[in-house]
Structures are given as C-alpha cells and as structure tokens.
Amino acid sequence: MPTEIIPAHIKELARLRLLDVERIFPAHGNFSRIAEGGYGMSLIDAVMEYNNNNMLRSVKAPDFYDRPIESMIPEAIKNGSVQVWENYRNVHRDNLKRVYDCWHNICC
Image (cartoon, rainbow, N blue to C red; front, side, top):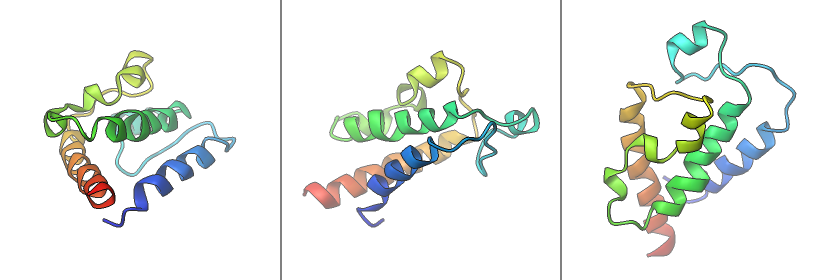
C-alpha cells in the first residue's frame, strides 16, 4: 500500500463533506440501510472518525490489531450515523493491517 493513500483518503473525505447531497449509497455499506434510503452526510464524519481520529491515532498501541471496530467509531455509533454491520468486521481487520503497514513504512 503506498504511504500517501491514507492522507489522500482523509483529504478527499473532507472535500466530499463540502458537497450538497442528501443521501450516500456506499458500495460496501449495510445492505438494509441502503435499501432503506442510504446514509446521510454523517457517514463521511463517521469514516473520518474511523480513519483519522482513531485508526491513525492508535496505530502505535500494543493492542492495535485487537481493537474492535466499535472502538474506532464510538461517536458515530452513539449518534446513530452508523451501526456496526457484521460483514464489515473482516474489512476492519484488513484496514487494521493496512494502516499498520502504512504507518510502519512511513515511520520505520
């Protein structure tokens, strides 16, 4: 994974946040939620919380690989922006590895 991908992703999320859209239909979202009308713009905030606020900030923690998705998006769960979708747990495990590998390549 090229090291510039995570910062570019965060930058693009901030840019997406500026769009005037009502609903978001992500390709890897909860199928039921999508069928019910998709997500609001708060999904972008949830993804930013996940990536920037928690994944990157906790990458040096000794228990990083053991952290469940709930620990990465507590505010988004609390405010109802997202619910934990069981199918996303495997994606989360892959994300943990990618973020760790990216950080390791930058810092070590």
